[in-house]
Length: 276
Image (cartoon, rainbow, N blue to C red; front, side, top):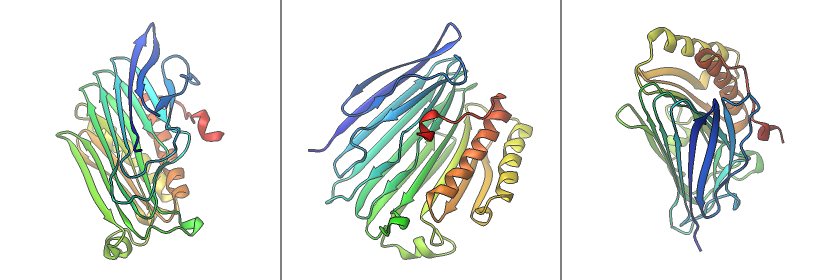
């Protein structure tokens, strides 16, 4: 039987401490809150015990952050969209930040297995005065395990309503898209790191984020297949193509840490789950 799992996660500031509370229905949970940076930033790990989605499965994730709160969310491992017999596997994530809130949305990669029929939707509603750093990483097949993405489709939708929209559909049969130098150029990992603010960001502040990203790009083996831009006064984006996940994730982590230091004067912080 297909799973339809739901999670609602709320961040609030209580006596200078960010506190997380959640409700769930089905196999989707949050592990205990951790405070490796002190009370101001609450780290949480989102867990989906089945480990992946098959045709007919739906995950609905709803995250809210109140004024003064700062949450950081990651996952213990990759999400997986498995082979489908025709039904759609859907993950929907909606993030809403009140004025004065901060959030870091840092899930590990989504792996699209050959034969999947999948959609991954992310909506970011950021009020004036709120700020978010997040990323989205997609792997097509498992090249190192000799499991290429030969069949199936994947739709990716990332949106800050009224401000920024990225939407693309990948069909494994579309070799022009997958192989062409004006498409994916043979790469099998797509990644985006984004900063989204609820009100226009001063040009000097945006330029500083772009400079950090471009400096780190110059030292990266992905220099020729990545770029940073500001498509809107409230958005800065780093986009990356890579042959596999690892070099893309390494670059995203470096730029993310540089951005949080620039934006919020916070030192580098690596979620504990990444080292286990």
